[in-house]
Image (tube, rainbow, N blue to C red; front, side, top):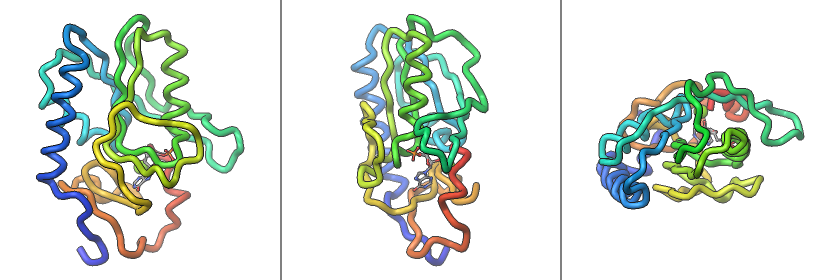
Length: 184
Ligand code: IMP
Ligand code: MG
């Protein structure tokens, strides 16, 4: 695919995700966390991570959309909400990327309002240079530079999610990227 470069190879992703799985197994020993995977982008990361973990888990999916163009930062709409109560449970959010931080910040406060016993975040990619709000994940697989990335779940205009590697565009294709980030 012209204009698309490999940033992180499939092998490197698998190796680092396996390391994270081990770490999470250690940290959650004796527990049975609820994994909350954020649709659609985190699906590939979530399934690979969970397959490499030994900890028994309960898997939930949420889908959120953000209100763009307002200053009411951190306001999200749950397009798909939890199917279970997380009260008193150990919760681990699994997300594809932290960019400005708005999505995770508001999702985190929404989930905290449900009174889990604990709440942590595992994120595949972290673009620290783009942060607008104070938001850090507990586990980060890759700290990446400020480039628009696709593949391994990440999309551009809903395409490229099924690339087995993480790639970046030399030049971003036609569409304005900002308008296109509603489906987290
Ligand atoms: P935030 O609220 O700005 O942190 O937005 C995070 C969401 O924006 C992610 O869940 C992605 O859907 C999207 N996003 C941010 N950066 C990228 C990127 O480089 N490629 C693809 N999607 C991205
Ligand atoms: Mg997206």
